[in-house]
Every structure is written in structure tokens, then in C-alpha cells.
Length: 400
Image (tube, rainbow, N blue to C red; front, side):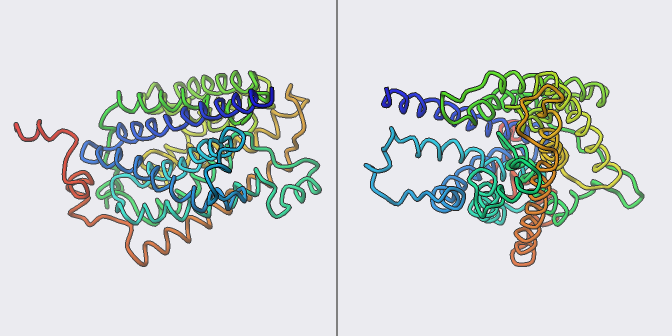
């Protein structure tokens, strides 16, 4: 029976890993559809190569930083419990690799290729797993300190703060240090429209992310005996709440509509194992509204050129999700309890501060040493031709 359980747990978490791996295709197509046509190839290449760098670095360094496990032992030891620890690494790697995938959307269309890969290595090797280990592996006694202070540990079931808020808040200083795309904000105060190149590809990316997210959330249980149908239905309710709120707030704009479910899913990750489905619906709806309002504000008023809106979507909705777990996870609002608003505020604030500091250091050092941005001519030609020497539709252009 024990062997059967080990095999079932290994398969369970492997299926989760594969579903979250598929989400990286969603990141790629969401970015491809949002950027202009001359940057589509770059979007696809970045996500795949970032994932590959993340895998090597997380295997060699990052997983050990977070969980104290080293893979520098014989294959016989690695196969203990049907290789469960290896597959757990695969699953958690897909979370870690989401951080550079998130950042990629914010810095799209004008970032150099190789400096971003260096940033990926540092972020996935140390910055992300350091905070991951604190929240999910009891490092440095921080969770015990929060419990002593606020009555419960900081609760983040599937990464609203650990993954999404951290990724979004690292991206903010990267976007600020890069500066806006050329001619995005004119000297006369006007704003040049840079419309998405392909709504169908944008929608495809959103759908792939949405479907894979059920592996992201449900399989965060990590063993079959801990699987929760509540997590699945809460994820569903938050997804539709985010969609409907973004539809209304965004006035039928398809870009907002397809980012709405992602906003809801980002927000519900933290408390998806605690909330009542109606609470999850509200959390998702608030997140959808946050995304539309803050994306519009950052782009049009504050003139922060965050191309895919990754700071509003992941940074702010992830922050909301961390806090919302302390509100809607409480028994008073139909949740399971075991969580306090104070603990959620402390843990969420720690994640935000750590991410902003990490983003400033990594991208600040890279900007001063290597430069972050393509030249004016390279940006005008587009990242596809400047970096990869081919466009998304070379045959069509040859015929012209």
C-alpha cells in the first residue's frame, strides 16, 4: 500500500508539473499577441530560453536554497519513493520559472536579450527561492515569529504572494529602469497607441494559462490524499469573477476581458484552500477591477510602460490575494479559518519589500554594467530582426 501511495503521489505531482509547464506556452502566446508584430518571435524565444535557464539554475542552486535538498547524489538515491523528490522539483521549478516569464511581459519590445537571461539566473537561483523557503519551508523562524505576533502563520497555499506578487513587484523596477518604448509618450503629452498585434493569440495565451492554472492551484496539495475539490471550485469562481468584472470595468475591451480571468486566478491562489466559493467569486471580481483600473492608471496617467500590465496583474492582484486570504478565509465569512488578517498583511508586505529590493539591485547593476535596453535603431527595427535575425512572417515580407 505504501508503494502504491508513493507511485500515486509521484504521478499526481507530475501531472501538476506538466499542466504548469503548459502555462509557459500561455505566457508566450499572451505576450506574442500583446506586443507589436516586429517583436513576436522575441516573445516566443524569451519564454522558452528563460524556462531553460531557470531549470538549470533551480536544479543546481535554487531548490537547495529553498528546501535544503541537493541533487548531487547517485541516481539510486534520487529514485527513493519513486523519484518523488525529483518530480516535486519539476513541479516547483515551473513555479520558479514563472517569475522571469512574468517579468518578460513588462519589459517586452525594448529589452536586451542576454542581460535578461543573467537576471533570470540570479532571480531563480537566489531571490525567489530565498523567500520561497521562508514561506513554504519554515526558514529562519520567520513563520513562527509571524504566528507569535499575529496568531497564525502567513498562509499562501499556491503562491499569490510567493510567485505572483514577487514576480510583479520585481518587474516594476525593471520596467522603470528600462523606460518607456520609443514614441510611446510624446513630448506634447500625448500617448501613441501601440495596439496588440493579435487578439486571437492573446486570447489563446489567456486560455492556456487559465486551463493550466488548475494544475497550479489544485496540485499545490503535492500529495493525492490532500487534494481538495474546494481549491478547484474556488479557482473556477475567482476566474469567472475576474472575467465579468474586467468585462464591465473594461467596457468590452477584449484585452481586459482575457486578462480578467488571470487576475482572478492570481488573487485566489493564496486562500483557495480556505475560502467559500462565494468568497472566491468576490476576490476574483475585485482583482479583475483592480487590473483594469490600475493598468489604465499606470499606462495613461503615470506613464509607466508596463507592456502586458504585469505589475497590476501579478504584483497588485497577488498582493490583494495575500490579504484577501486573511479576510475571506475567516470563519466569519464562510471560510475554514486558521488564518488571520494580521499575519497576511505582514507576510504580504515582506514579499513586496523583498521583491522590490531584489528587482532594484539586479536590474540596477545590470543597467550600470551591461545596459538593459536595445539601441534606438534596434528597437525601431524590432527585437525579432535585431536579436533573432528573422521576423514572424518572413515569406509575406519577401513577397512584398
